[in-house]
Structure formats: C-alpha cells, structure tokens
Amino acid sequence: MKYIIGTLVCVLALITPVAWVVNKIHFNQDCSGYLKQTADANTAEIALERLNLALDYIERNRLTYGYTSVLWQTEDENVEFWYKNLKACQTELKACLNGSQLEKSNVLMKVRESLTDAKEGGTSLTIPQGISRYPNNAAWMIFGWLSTLLFIGSASWMFYKWQDEL
Image 1 (spheres, helix red, strand yellow):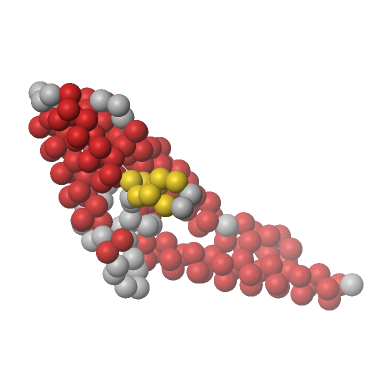
Image 2: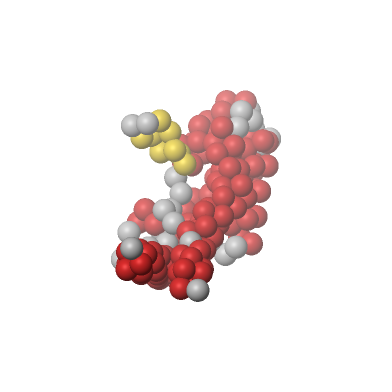
C-alpha cells in the first residue's frame, strides 16, 4: 500500500511539469508560430494576416500588460512593450498595403527586425521569457517548486522504505 501511495504522489508531482509543457505547446501553436511566419513573410499581405492571428490570441488571453517575471522586473520581460511593438507593426503593415513595392519591402524588413533578434545560433523571436505561463507565472513557480519537493520527497521515502525491506 505504501508503494501505491508513493507512486501516486510521484505521478501527481509530475502533473505541473506536464501542464507547463502543454501550455508552452499551445502558445507556440497559437501565437509564436504566427509571429515567426510574420517575420518570414514575403509580402505585406501575408505578414499582416499572420500578425493578426497572433494578436487575436494575445488580446484574447490578455497578454497586453505587466511583466512575466515573478521576483523582479526586467525589460526583456515587459509584456506591455512587446504588445505595443506588435501593434505598431500591425499599423505599419496596414498603412503600406497600398504603397509601392519598395515601401512594402522596407516595412517588411522593419517588421522582421522588430520581431526577431540575431543571436550566436541564428535568429530567434523576440518574446518575453515566460509569456506562455503569463499571467499566472507566480502560481506556476510555486507549483513547480512544490512539485519538485513532492517528487523528491516521495521518491526518497519510497527508496528509504525499499532499503528497509532488504
């Protein structure tokens, strides 16, 4: 019976990391994938279409203000700046739709530069760290720590009990 309880507690402790991963996958499918396509778009029309899909998700999930950080606020986790920057990209894309090809190309380059960062390993999207868990980052942190402690405690307890039987 004690092994069943220990195993059950270990499984319960794994729910938070699994939910964390599922949350990140949903964000990637419903938002960051569209932002990547916006940055990669070859025409202003395609870029605007993809950006609108991402902004619909962002606004529907109220990812428009605050910081993703839990303990201290840093500007790379500023959700409001990120959102306003995306809205500015949307405004510029809408404004250039009737413009010349040169104007559209310039706006596309500007949007690409706004949405991405150049890093050592290549180019990556500019997204506040932890945005997939926002606005519940503090709860996710607490559940993460509790799950870790619960898993370590129950696994240690089961190992200790197993050694007693030897």
